[in-house]
Image (cartoon, rainbow, N blue to C red; front, side, top):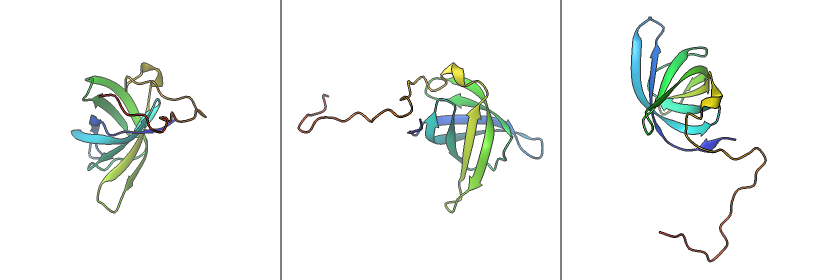
Amino acid sequence: MRVTLTLPVIAHGVNDQGEKFCVRCATRSINKQGAQLVMDEPLVAGQDLLLVNENTNRSTESRVVYAKKERDGHFYVGVEFVNAENNFWKMTFPLPGARPLRRPLGSKAMA
C-alpha cells in the first residue's frame, strides 16, 4: 500500500563517473518496501543508494528500480529497500485491500 507523503531524505551514492554524491531530496510517496523520490540528481536503475530519513536520522540501503526525468526538470526515482523489514519510515501502513477511514459527517477534528 502506497501513501502519498512528502518527507525530507538525504541520498548518498556514487554517480556514473565514480564520484560520490550526497543530495537532499523529498519523497513523493512511500510504502513499507521503498519510496518515490523527487530529486535533481540523474540516477539509473540498479544504482545503490544509502537513504537517510531526516526526521528520524535513520538510514537504510536501497536500490533504484526506475528513474525518469519529467517536464518540470526533476527526476522521479523509484527505490526499493534492501531490507524492507526495518520499518525505515517508523509508520504502520494499511493492509492491502483495507478501506480508508472516514470521519462521520458533522464531526469536528479535535485540536
